[in-house]
Length: 96
Image (cartoon, rainbow, N blue to C red; front, side, top):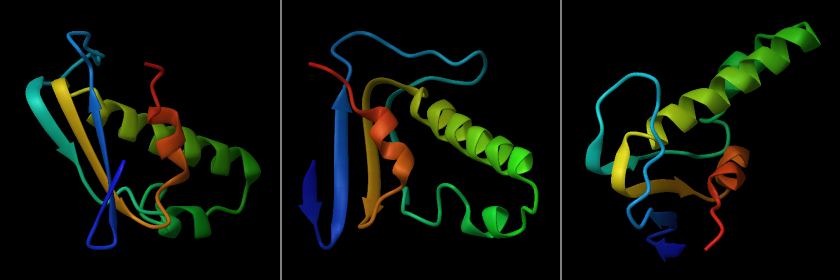
């Protein structure tokens, strides 16, 4: 993780292994930008929810969309955010 002009930058190199989604194109390098708190998950969607079951569905959908975006990378993934970053970024941490 690097700090650049008040933005946190996460770089994850897969070292040859690839996460593949069910559909979609793969790219050698792929950026996923603006993974800020209140952007992912969408604060607007969360505030519009009145039922806890619907809230869980929104969280699952938002987490899944971030996962799908991140699986477009074959060799390198760049994820950016400002502090505080999305709570879903913890899901991206990989063991080395």
